[in-house]
Length: 474
Length: 97
Image 1 (tube, rainbow over the protein chains, first blue to last red):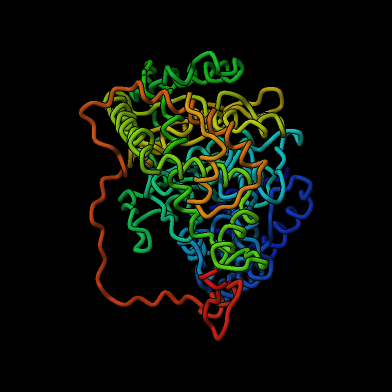
Image 2: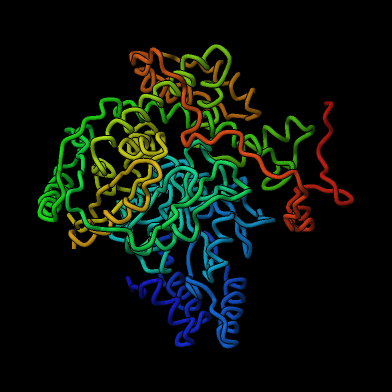
């Protein structure tokens, strides 16, 4: 696992003409090739990446500043629409799809000189917590090839940890950035809902889908968020970025109140994770933070709310894959209805079908009030509980998942057990608050991480505190 | 316990324009019953006086100027993505069987 220089240093060196973007892209492609046994990557965007790299090197030669990410290679989860290759969302139904436009997040990164070199594996349509639901391959955990890297952004997490590129980007609907970051051992940020445009990202559950960076350090995550965030006319749910941006936030924890979420430390939590967090708490206290216990009694219900709302939104969002305008289409159909039903039957994997059926059920007349509406009401309670908590504390702290990375195959035949992997990550999505995974320890040769949460739109102070936790954990 | 029969699964699949194999129907019937059973404990939560949350950031009526924007989407690429086309148009199977 070779590492890269800090992203800012790489871009500085490219802008100074001391390193070449073409060489950086070639190095990244070489590392991807050498790590192919991990199955982190679905496809390369090689030709376009080299073309863009040359354009950046030429710009530098002409004396131009090519941006804050000049020549920095990165890897995008394959549910981001990009030029230079296919965008599949790891699904057979999108195989062969060439995006006619790029995601806004990709455009913003490219405008600062970054270069997409490859598309990372994921659970098809981001439905899962292990990448085992990918229609193409199962990504291996960088620390133990018999274990999962987490999911759904498992390929993105493994890419960063394996050093395939200096950073990657992922999506987080119920934990899909934070949980793989914890299982694989990198920083993963889910910002406030709406802070990064979702335009050009394959939609999963639109009311909770978030986009965020996966990096080696908190500082680099701050830089990437600073570049990707802000209002976008192409996504009307986007919000303004912090007027101060996200770089260089105050990391002093003196006098800051950090709440330990009682419901996150129940008996199901692996004792080794608990021990690592206990050690961190001692360090946080010596750094001047005040640690208090906080209870959000509604949290154990968050997963049930999520597994009603998420499939409901999934079933709606997946209705566009009808085999007529793009992606896979069944050729043997005799009429249009059969073409829809057969294209979807053959193009969707088992988990997408499962979620379409649950979603259709909870949205159908007669069950809507009992499931969908009830879940939206309980969601209000979750929002209120978080708001109450953040009136008395600055941050909330807890584990990211109840266990470390599990074995490949351990949960793949039990959808409910797989859903339970998200039990500690879904609540911030439902409330729209920012949360970040920070690796703090290694146990049994596998990473241990914590999850830090803040009130909506407090991403800047969250990143400041996360930086301190990163330092304390070293 | 909520139980989804195979017949109900088939009806839902039909509503979602999705053909399922008989294996999938029987598996989904038992799996989805378990999942619905898991989520059904929400019944016991008191939500008296609360309004549902459909969105979380409080934005309302986000509008933009009513002007033509050129998104520079390549029409050729849109057409090459079509599974079946004729004269630059989407071609589909006949609608009346």
